[in-house]
Image (cartoon, rainbow, N blue to C red):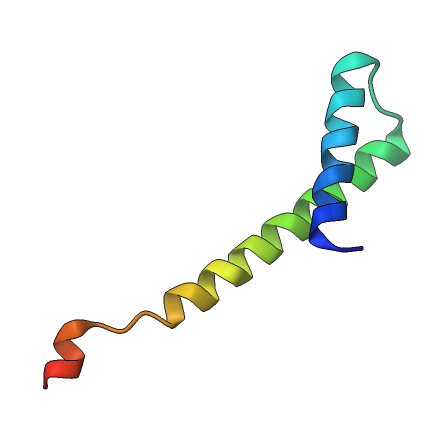
Amino acid sequence: MTMEETIQRINELARKAKAEGLTDAEEIERNQLRRKYIDAFKKSLKVQLDSIKYVEDEQN
């Protein structure tokens, strides 16, 4: 499942939760998908932060 598909499914479950509620299985799926999204976001952010170079370091 791609990240785009994951986000789409999270949104589907969110809409269903507001409209009619979720079953226990759907709540578990939603929580797993949210965790997957958050972990991927953190990993991406860490890569971006690790690639930052300080100007002061390059001048020395």
